Image (tube, rainbow, N blue to C red; front, side, top):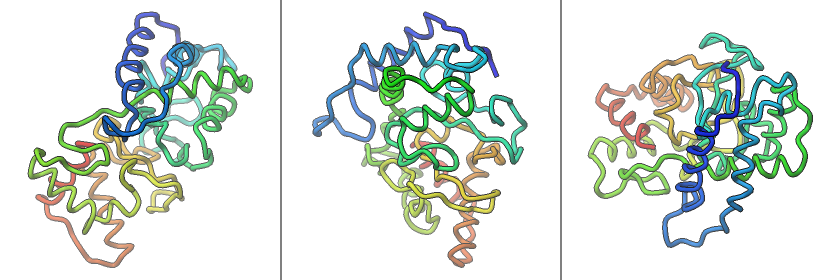
Length: 265
């Protein structure tokens, strides 16, 4: 894991991204709809500083940005505590992106944190081995993380359904996503997750992660057992077919279409 140091240039850029996107339009809401009041920009800026502050960790060496660098995305590494482990290690946990994290149903791979506040507090205390954050610190960090949007794609509406102008492959993929592949039984639109966990045969019952920005978060699953999105999609199709006893085997063309849709999220 990289050592966390405060970088003014990175901080300025990340804050600009947060203000430009996260504060102007709440993820999952279309322009013109009723929207909650945006967070205080000063509180978001304070949260960004704390996000890069290694003094929140017990040893003073790691910050939130060590794993969620710059604008809250993932470094795509697998950790056991603060130690990087090999992909596929059953003790490891993949680092999720924080883009759109304010819209999640529950938090953590075990789904143990029902709120973003509890998730951040737990990460600081249990993983970073730091002192329990003050109410002010936690409020600022929550405001910053809530300001981070997921990337938008012209091919999809805010609810995750295809726009009329999207490609045929994405339209076919969406049709499979909501029918034969059974993806939407767990990855529920518009946030593409759900609050309760699932046991898909990968070593236990884990939270269903959001698929927003999933094309940018390889490798996949809690223990990063698949390197490619196509392999992850195929694994999940086969799991659903076995669970529901459909006997349905996807063609290569169907996998291509499903990957096209999921990649657009």
